[in-house]
Image 1 (tube, rainbow, N blue to C red):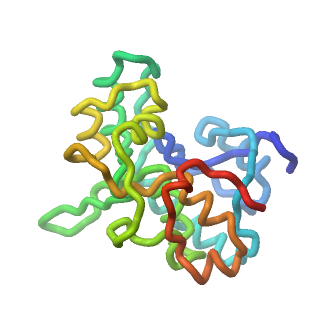
Image 2 (image 1 turned 135 degrees about the vertical axis):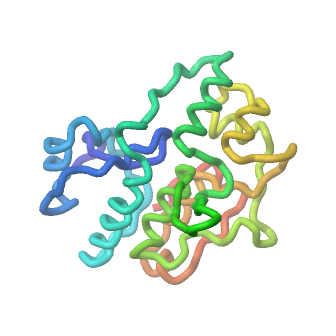
Length: 223
């Protein structure tokens, strides 16, 4: 694989593009995935800046099992179409976020039936999707708990730039959809924090959960 090659990815965009693929011999053969499930697996240009290089086959299998397990909560038949990203479409995007079960805070949330305790819904942010995948099999904890003292907070303008791409307004409907209350600031796990967490040695990634700083929101690779 070379820089800018197209590779299949699973991510919480939104919408979640983790629709269950056809079985393949190995996740290390991305071409096979792309050929077998062209309608369910998106591809992006590969710009790898952070990674965990010493994944064992057992860990890879565990992450695949996690992916298949959570995919059942996001069936292809109910995957909503993405609205146009332009000013004035805030209400449509609020509904879209809700339908996709895309949230900003916390990074992931599981809703259970109050009577049976059966898991009914999973909700993720981009960060929650990645960290939960790794924590399911390979890393005990990627980031420190956002509720810990000293975890950086972000304001409305940062939320607008990051989650709304600076295009949509941070309306009451959108705030409710992505699970933010009040006027902030909020202890949101931001994408740059995960990149910084994985921009360390494999040993550090596995042994030490990363406590982010405000500067990590704008990620710059160090290796």
